[in-house]
Image 1 (cartoon, rainbow, N blue to C red):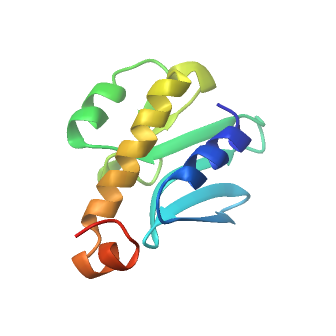
Image 2 (image 1 turned 45 degrees about the horizontal axis):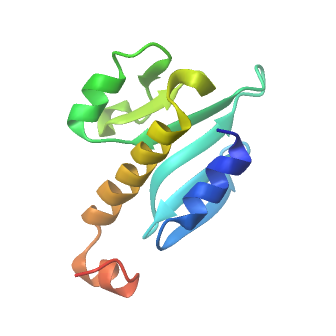
Image 3 (image 1 turned 180 degrees about the vertical axis):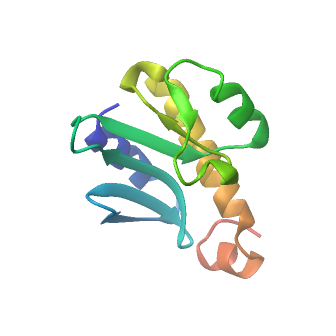
Length: 119
């Protein structure tokens, strides 16, 4: 998945906002909380996608080749893809949807209601 495809997909999820920060990283949020990031390492030029995941997904994904605990965010159960082919596009999209749901679910009931996310 290219960065443009990543951005287009994340933009389709409900109540998301986008900001470019941290040296040109594409950061996606719901309710002001980050659920997915696509960044480029200047030295390599490669895109790296990171996302929040469940405890179980974190355990499974970090055992796969090409997926590591996300730098600075691993303690919060984030992973980072080291290569674009570490997950299929379909699987990556499913994990991004799940990340969005995890973060949205942690928002207050009032915030979720204001964002049209139920409750």
